[in-house]
Image (cartoon, rainbow, N blue to C red; front, side, top):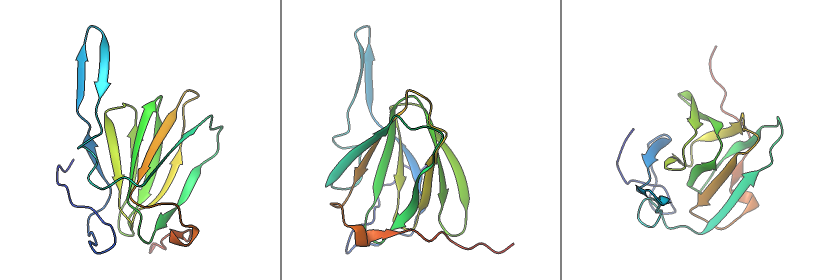
Length: 140
């Protein structure tokens, strides 16, 4: 896991692949409080959450401009990430574990538990032209 805060947004291209960060969590006998304020390494322009997923895969794209932070705030899911060179399977199973997806990260979300809620924070507002649906072609 890298703890750097380098991100990609218009005017600041990034060369790194997806990476995990730990979100600060404060726990006591009353429960847990996880704070996103300064943990997310980009200005948040949009957020959405995915839940009630059957055996389907979600995603299957990357972006021209958008960087995303994915947090499974309940249950668990797997994100298959392909940066053009490396394919990784990353399990999100704790609400304090956050996957930062850079623009070059073609990703698919899968293996959602029945109770999974995946929160996604994005660096840009929705723009259909920002999506790249064609996966990378790898040499056999």
